[in-house]
Image (cartoon, rainbow, N blue to C red; front, side, top):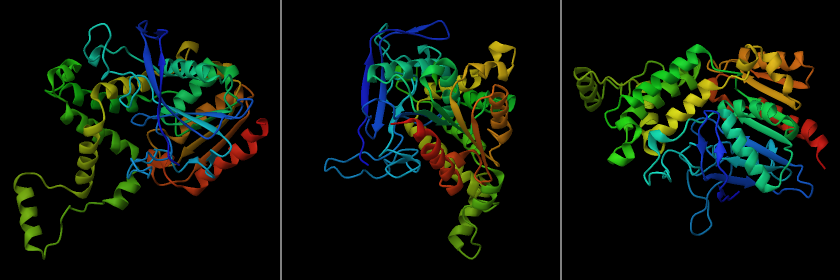
Length: 389
């Protein structure tokens, strides 16, 4: 499935929850499948922290052939014949405001100064993203969504959709998510942010004006985050305590190991892996975007306005729900999904829940677990499809 992104420009300012107003802005969007005659088969996909609008398919080279390593981040879930079948559903992927993959964000030019927004880009929240997505649907002529779906931070957006625009959502699929972050999760995010802002190349968030990039801070932030996405079992299975080169019979390897000991660069396999992930991330992700999005994660808490009563907060929802969690996901544990399930049941909402015994940690929501994929497929085929012409 070859896909092409589209840019939607909005000239009407967007009021934000912070009290700031974002002037004219752009959203980067991809769509898959065909919108039916009565516009009832639209499915909105909300992305997680470092993902984008490129949900499925591949980009093409000049000859129309798929580009290597251009696969959409949820390509195992969405496409022809897949659990979210684009032969039936019109799927929409939107890059959030403040991101660095095409939608207006800190790397774009601030019309008030003529220089990159940088640290001056206004604070955005999950609720702001949902408002922007709702405006996009207005432009596309879609009044009601067959479903909203997302994992992790995308699951928070999905939940927020059912509360901000309850009449516009028939089904909500919330995967590996939570009604808010625990203190431990906020702590991990804060340590990652401190790594970025402490980088000498950060320059108060205006590094683009200075011609620098805080790559060192971003590398550390990504390493911290990546640790939380994997389970202990997966780390031990993939890396254990193995050194990067441990062949004692190989003189060159032995010499390298001796050198690393002497310089305190021992480099276990897990260290090498984390450094690789950090290096790769620092080459394509924007530091200010990382700060903005992790703050949006921290701030999300729909129960706060209801004296921390989640049942009262979710009383506004009218959608039917599927929630999915994974047993080894300690960042967004099954207990957090069960909190949402209980609050919805307390409100007599229609809820399906799948708790998948998977070893992969938080990353499981992106992987090919057949039980997980079948649970989503069954929900779309048996529950959502019943209400679509």
